[in-house]
Length: 167
Length: 111
Image (spheres, rainbow over the protein chains, first blue to last red):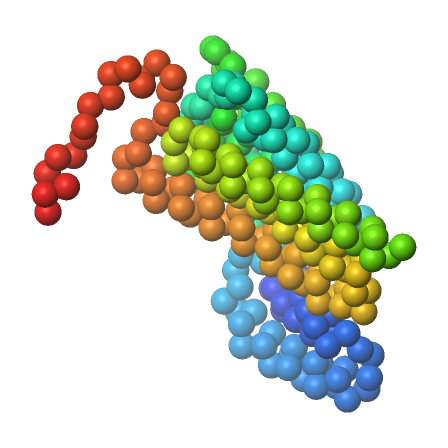
């Protein structure tokens, strides 16, 4: 697949799926108007959607997205139980610290997804992104941990799952 | 039966939003508050929306769209807020630093 066609295809697919979900019907006239609108939006916006170049469009991407979503929901649930424990304990066990971690995601879209995932998982919040360094606020930083260990502990499995559908 | 499951999900969501509110009051500094506010409220919203899916199954697709928007935008906004605080020089809270805090930026208050 040509590199230039990726934004067009993905914008079109996103518009079409959104249209189908919001109208919630498969009636022919709705489908036709949705198709026309999706094409118009796609032609106007796709040349400016450089960020979508980070997507990998292939058949393996869809199960990749599903696997990522399930892992993400599991991590979110774990984060909230952890947080509930912290909030409700009498003296909160928190040792907040800013740490810097290194990511191997190349595209902006990949970094966006990774930063979002970090923000919603146990005790971490993405504060800033510089090139391949993410500045992360960690609510319970162990003493004297080095960057490599921190990176492994915070990113965890996310990069593996994300790399199936973004660069 | 469906409405019972839906109600349970609604209750779980509401509990997590309540936890978020409690955490917002108890946490010591702005970064921790943002963390609690983002995570608990996101999961709470997921719980509420899933509950509504069980009670009104015919709305499922629209509710899924809402869920997607919440999941995409809430971490981005909290990240932007915390970045603004970081750029303006807000320090991270430490237990030890509590003893020697001094009133800072007096000039700012007079303006």
